[in-house]
Image (tube, rainbow, N blue to C red):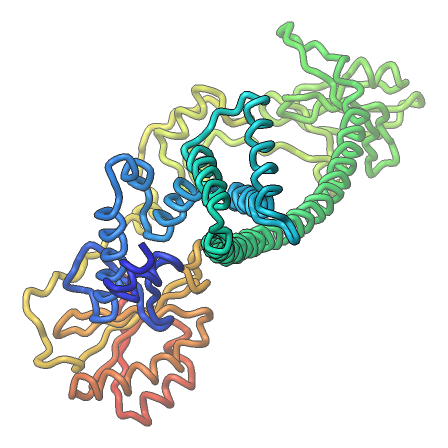
Length: 512
């Protein structure tokens, strides 16, 4: 096969023994390997040589051998499988060689040995084989016939001729042994090369895994730091929660109103007054819209409370009035409490629906009515939210403007007469090169668009200068006008200096 392949084409034999015919390192890969028209001369030669090698092996083997190599893609794989099939692995080859060496030593004529002694030794070997039940092969029978024939010749005094013939056979066997040893050495070299390649693959894989381990260790350290931060935040929130539990220790106590409804007490405290009459153990009731004082609690504290048609008064044990008050509609309000800042939070209630409309961020009357109906806002009264007039702020805020009509003609007469440009970013996802900004330039005449990717906004001017020089030389036209929005990158002093140096007119487009 080696002689036949080399006679056919030396390159084919190189492909069979070493692998696919190589391409130069600078040869670019094909975008579509199935498109033959895209192949260069070098690529076409490589494909032909590789397929010649496969075709040669397919035509040189039987149908049984074809089944063994039908799944192989390259000629070297076919050759390796055929070598293993017909010559065996390197271990089997070594065993065969050892057997041949043993047979050579066994059946060669020893030094100072007579023909009769050699014949007797051969006879004993054959007898021992019979004793172990090993059948004769055709080679054994041939050897016996040769020995018998030679013994007859010896008897006929032709010892010299027999020795010469026997020596020729020994020399032939020795040459065969040397050839086998050379092939065995070549096989060992191929196995060693293959082992080195596999070892290199394992080393590369080990390096990759080592790098991954380092990356995971780094990620683990980052996670540990984040865990510590979250643990500190959790402990801080736990402390706040414990404080809230302490402040709501009165939540199990409730007060009862005149309509038999109840309110939970969520806190207690002391309210000072301007008359140095502190009211202690004042309850903070959940959901109560007014700051109310308990008359019974004041009486239990030793105060006297007197109510009249238009006023009220709270006196001490001596009868001195310490907290006067006035009546407003159906509520009695004590004087002076509205002036105490930092201690009391008064609830402002209003029945004006338009005031609630402004407080709720110009919400529509329909939305406010739904909020009030389903009690979604604490303190929002049951009001009639009918539209009695139009809100001026809403009327002005909802005014619309006519948009510019689309042009159905091209206002420019040649390329590069007007360039539109804009820059956007940073995008959440970077491109393959790691850039997050895009500089877009559109020619008004041809609508041809260029997109330049940037790492930072400040790269826009440098790339734009290169673009202008390149496109003017490539297209054979000069840029006249540039139009952009009012982005800070286009209104910088550096951009304006570049426009003036090149003689470009810079216009700004309307928003949207």
